Image (cartoon, rainbow, N blue to C red; front, side):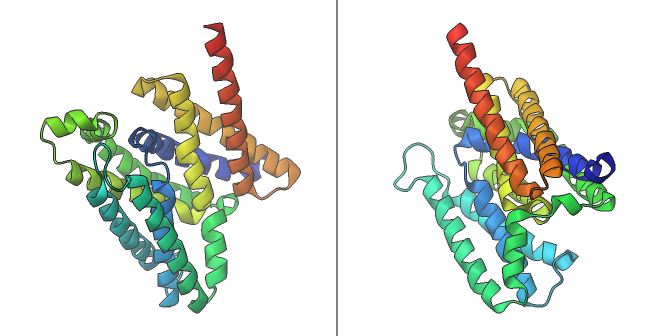
Length: 272
């Protein structure tokens, strides 16, 4: 078991390391479904690449996905509003997701292996990941991590204190675009391996658990990482023992861990 599941487990830990942190920004911004929208834009790009005869795992296919993801990032940055606007930002995000999904279905209908490509994008193939792929993606995530480390003041402020940043005259749309592009790059790299559902879950669930127990950013990061690691480990183990599809089983395990965290939070609140 250890030999077979070690690579998927390490891959999950690498994914959790970057996505659980980015998820804190997403929860703080209140744009919960931005990941699904950007992931769907990446999926649309990969299906369009397939339509033009590009191999799914090639560099060109990645560029197609990244270009479509950057288009989504630009839309989200330009349409962000402060306070109560005429149209909620979440509505724009949902519209982008629906349109991208419909477009992907239309393109997949004309592309060779289109239906299989849509299925692969949703479910992923993390169980079959190889060590060279893990190393390559780890290097890319490390570069993104360094970017967020050096720009942590700006990114954290526009996510957690946007009103203050606006009063100080920050160029919110520019920093928003940079954040969403970096976020989109992470999603574009992750979706071919983990799938849309698991990537979304890794972003949102650990961050939600962190917000349940703390408001200190360092504590939230540690809680988020720990939650993701625990849920991924349990999901991989149950998937192996019960012979279930790995990606969907891990997603369900994240849901159970979130339920357990909610019960624990309620019990600790009563005790306090």
